[in-house]
Length: 323
Image 1: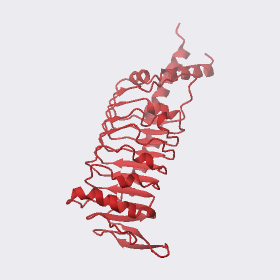
Image 2 (image 1 turned 135 degrees about the vertical axis):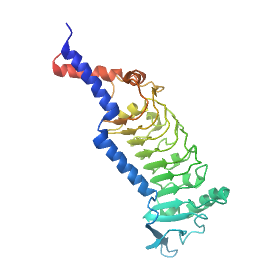
Image 3 (image 1 turned 90 degrees about the vertical axis):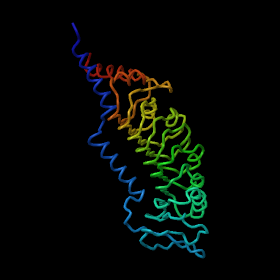
Image 4 (image 1 turned 30 degrees about the vertical axis):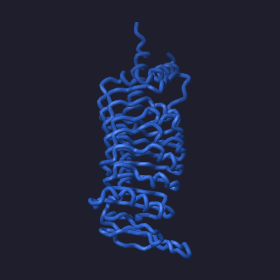
């Protein structure tokens, strides 16, 4: 005769895994947090164009910082101590202390000269900020000057529709970086090594692009990203995903991997990840796979070798139930 207790245990385990991978606090927790992070990201990109921005001036004799407020609409903001000025038809302003926003939504002419203008301007004011947002440019590549800003703690690249790829050997030089984000860019892929050894990096926001492929080692253990706890990749064109999300779940407590609103239907495991009863525990992750093209839960369980999690869950629940 069938052991009904064991059947119920297996069913409960499957439900538990489904909740862990797909729903896990999504409605009441993750979506709200995701919205908060998105709102914060929008604030950093200067979403309110009518506001006044705080502009910092440094006196050349005493190095005292003085704060003045002026309306930045249709004006060019320039640091008085720099020999280079804000690029033509762009705005450079400080909405917060140590946060520089460079916006070029009105730059329609002399596009080819914009890159050298930015490369000349940023080093001249580098002492004045640790947070940088560059938005609304026709650039096809990230300015080299950004890669040299070793004091940066946050970097956001927004609305660069012609930027299809991030550069190699650039962000790895920004050892103080804690937050990185791109939004509304033309990115189509993310290669391995982009963030290697950024030990202070905590949040990566890559949502609302056109990303269809990700290097399997970009976020895995070999990248040495011990403090990275939030990776947001929602609203892209991903069709498959490797096992790095569950690998990271063994590395960081409460990690958040946002993959909703893609086209994911296939799970690969080039990393050779496997979970069994002797594996390190999964530390309360939130892996959001809502709104994808997943047909069968078994596709994920077998492709990621996650069946061991089911075995361990059954064994643990069976023990508790006295089976």
